[in-house]
Image 1 (tube, rainbow, N blue to C red):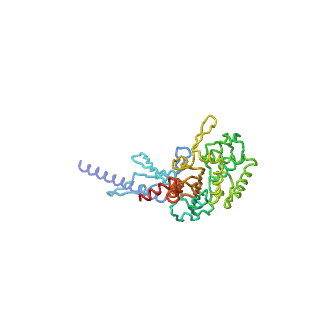
Image 2: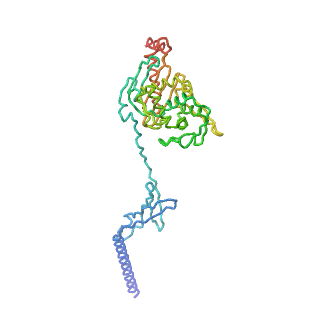
Image 3: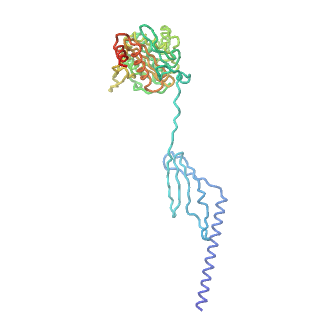
Length: 394
């Protein structure tokens, strides 16, 4: 009797287990069928941070699979979701043991910089011109100021943007006009660079004397100072620019054109031959000589003292005796430099335009100086003596 009862209980248990398994399999199959038939849903997940954009949530395909192991159906309890927050943030949502686990990853961003803009000289192919000194400047000219002998030339007829070499003409005209140097001039919004968006420590409202502005324009290549000088010239800026072009024609600068007094515009253009004429005229003006070769200068602006320095480090070099100089740079013009300097007993005018590299114009000037000392030194000069000694020793 007990055995029959035990047999009936065992049979009932077997039936119950089979019934439960069948029900589980049917419910799992129906759920899988519904999930497969339903379209993929996209949920908008917003970030708590201000201004966060909606992110796209995609259900991982692995979460909808049903695995069969040992004749039993089991649903994968990993419900993975990939959350993309913008271009650089990826988050993975996982459900484990009834809890949601969030893993956030930030992808590294590789920024590809645009190639630097080519200068006019590069676009014209001037940098392919070879020269004996292997200069980095695509245009160069070295002339004896006294004899007018051309010692070195390279593309000296090419007409290119001249950048802040423009300020040498600006300074020359202001000096020759004999305007009151102590007259106060205030920097206005009109003096702010809208061409290249360059910065300046001379903020709008700064008031300096004309003499101080002229010093900063020639020595430190201050754009707002140069513009203010042209703007306050008798007759205004347009009159000043007209006088700049008239002065160029008077000096015989046939390839030169000015449209403003700073050099920020690439339409200010000239050739090496023309610029040699300008350097010669600027050297004849004592004020331009003095201010352009000043190593440093301080101005009082309100309660502050602003320190300005020369843009040409050769001015401070004991190896150089420079009479007048000016540097310039905009992307269209490249690195530019003009100088009058005494080298190997000669008074030389040097012009370097469209040099590639931040310090290459200085290196080109050094190459020319050493070359002149070795091959064109005036007899009896210290450089000539050194050259002879070198030849004997060699």
